[in-house]
Length: 470
Image (tube, one colour):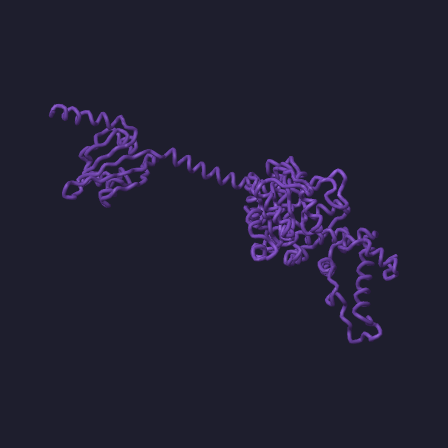
């Protein structure tokens, strides 16, 4: 038996050298009892036996900067520790202390694994992730400027919105886009559709606030022949069927009647519906995107909107910030609209820097839609003329018809020169404004577009003799 033990102890060094991981055994004083060749290579201490040397002397001599073995003796418990050596290699060490029957520390045994390549790969992975993130940001910017029409942005908030849109595009989950009027909710919904695998399928949009309640069900679900008075003889498919395999965008979802909310909820839950006048179930594959200018609290606390429907359509809520929350987007949007309307109206819009600041500081209650209208108005009214401060104020406030737009009467103004009533003053202001727009554009249609009114309004005033512009 003693002979067997002798041979086992003799061959244990051979056994340790067969193990790829570094192994080090030191006693309670730090003296090295055993180590293998992997330890010598890792620490660059090859060429000599280290048995009998003390780890404290090796560290003090500068051969090693630190020792996990000494740390294990210090704390007297199992430790995990990374150590980087002069060779540039890094090892992760696990040390387990051994105690005698009286609880005295006898020795500690450590195994170390070279993780240099792993750390290098992790570093490269982090660099790759940063590069990919930067690339995606640039990609969103490029797609915003060139690939998706009017989605122009540079602000961090909109970059975050577009990043979220890109991620949700890969799924078919319902998305609720919410934000103030004019922020571009339909454009965001269109971006999600175009970025999805449904992009070559229909994108069908419906405004829930513009269709009469009694017609909304027929528009959405369709109907069979003879279902109601006025129904087409052949019946009619609803927009759910038109959007099969594509996307249905429900704008102003907060205006959906309660009756329709129940039917939409049933469709979202079961994936099928019935046409009006039919008992046959229709099954379609449609992704639902919705939008509202109501806040989450307004929807949740409203007696006119079902909370269970809210949770169904709002699996992924995306908030599109107002323009005053992302002022970094104002100048890029202005440049984009100037380029667009210079081409449309053969203009050469000139906005001095100080007036650009006025546009930047403006609150934009109508958001991107209002900004777009203002730049178009400038192109129609002023063409290539450089704008003055008065011009900007007129363009920004031309729809307001309250007292702030009327010239103040001076003390020398005789009472006979003042309008006889508020109504006549309003009519006089309207006439002057329409006349100026017409003289600038030379067209009733262009003048009405610039002022944001229907051409029939101008024609009606001309016919009644209230207005004279020619």
